[in-house]
Length: 197
Ligand SMILES: Nc1ncnc2c1ncn2[C@@H]1O[C@H](COP(=O)(O)OP(=O)(O)OP(=O)(O)O)[C@@H](O)[C@H]1O
Ligand SMILES: Nc1nc2c(ncn2[C@@H]2O[C@H](COP(=O)(O)O)[C@@H](O)[C@H]2O)c(=O)[nH]1
Image (cartoon, rainbow, N blue to C red; front, side, top):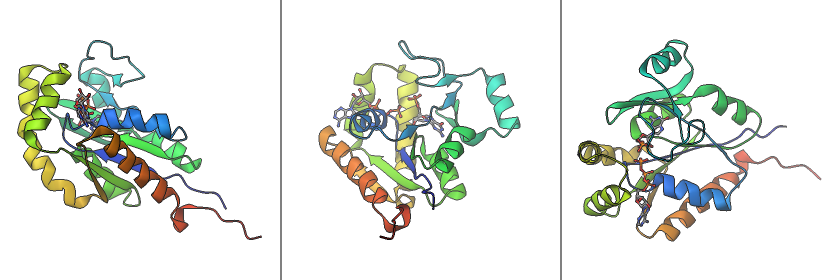
């Protein structure tokens, strides 16, 4: 019997630390495939096409929607973002676990289609800290930061639809908790293949 991969979805408000937690996690857990999203957002300095995102024009993004190439897509803070479907499905079918780092609208779409996934909400210690992290990151315009913060209260209301919540106060502890969730899910009887001896 072949093990099917587990789909892990990390989401939460912008600036809460999803990307930071994901990078730290990958140092500890290497056998997980990370989905690369497509976006119409322009690259930030240092971001690389095909590594951070697939940076697409509006037309290219629309074509992918029309061809049903996305598992989910959403307009997030005035740009489009989407998860290419084939990468996720192919890896899960091959028994590999897949990690998505996406916004809440996208996570809710994935939950509808694949409720067997594991949904992890990264939660801020408080709104002030979230605002400071977005400002200190220094990657977004003032308007973009304001849009991201304005969406936060509504986004936080969705935490109840997730399987787990991880408060990202102290980074090391937040990474440990997320790692523990992944390890525990991998140990669930339904997710492992046992040989009768
Ligand atoms: N526990 C933490 N303590 C202090 N700073 C943190 C912590 N976690 C993340 N940060 C910092 O907060 C900023 C935002 O983190 P990050 O870019 O990972 O957020 P994000 O949720 O991925 O944002 P986005 O959704 O916009 O991509 C970064 O500058 C990061 O270094
Ligand atoms: N619904 C989706 N949301 C995504 C995807 N990839 C990233 N994101 C989320 O968008 C915001 C903004 O990202 P940023 O890189 O501009 O800061 C953030 O919440 C990401 O998690 C996706 O494929 N689908």
